[in-house]
Image 1 (cartoon, rainbow, N blue to C red):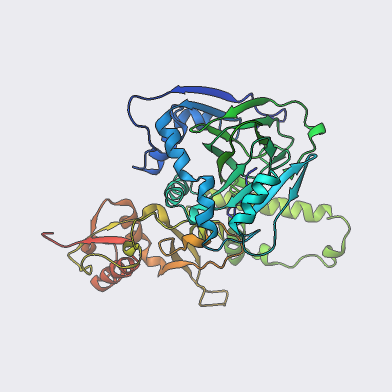
Image 2: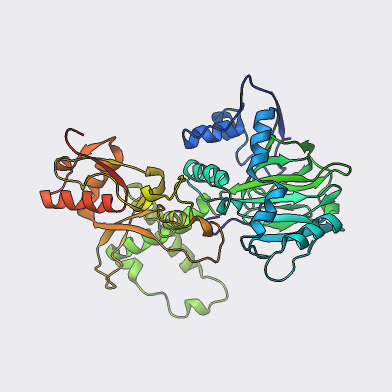
Length: 468
């Protein structure tokens, strides 16, 4: 995730507490996910567990299993992705490795059965039926609208990239050996049944993907079978394996993953460089040269360790009085690589400004707020040490859904930049339900209209004229 999510496959060293199991009876009336808001969607995904309970008791701590007897929700889950969808998808030009992996777990090891080049459906189905291979479809939200709708809302909710993979496994087979992931994992069971075994982590909240030998992980902490409509969550680092029981139809499940490289450690690495850079402008000691031959030493000297410790304490003191933490990469990386807003039709509302040109007497309102970040950074058009900070506004309205979470695909940033003098006016727009252009905290009417026009041109604000 921020570095593109890998397929998903706590506090305490002894591992998480046993997975909680929740049985849910069918509600009276049709069941569906709630798309009214990002929080509403997540609440409906984990229902009947409350979000406050989830983040207090389960998130990054232990698994949560929700087994539902809800035919309407099961039918909806089945519609998200079916084995039968592969034929039409393959006709659109899918490639082995990039879009689809074919694999099977043999004697505790992953055996990849990919061919070269383009995927042909008949060959894919042959490997599925005859070799009992699992089909792993990468990032199906690129093609399935309802998954785009779900994951776009979840990216708004978490403020982190959200990827997905579909795993289709024939009866009596297993695709992957026991392993753990570096992402938080949400599982939706779509078709058939899948037997899961979860083990206590050897690396709680792991930062890397890892495979574990089955003879070294002991007995499962939890073992259960998912059916259509069921939900499973487990934290990164949770060792797991899953197989389709023999004698049944194939199993299809969706793995939704998030929070890769999204820890406090990552945030510290991202922000500390900007803090050091700014402080060095004012602090002569930070600009002083290193002792001669320090970099040639086998071990760092005690003097160097004391100096670094002193600098860190000084930076901590400076941080206490700083309102703005400069994000070097994380904010921009998230916005550049996330999904664009979900829309039906040609998406004109994301690329063509609507309504009237903003004027001084217009009222404006921010739109797509969850798809915009505002950050500070040095003026990128200047390279000298005296370059001023600028306000950068990045947004995802023009992002390409087709490249979402694909790693090596080229992405570009979209947005605007303004001088620091515009900060108060931008905060007014950000923090107001609606505001008149003439009330913006800028010196001249020309600046006020220019700011509103720039935001309107990027489709970031809606305009309402007097009397409208």
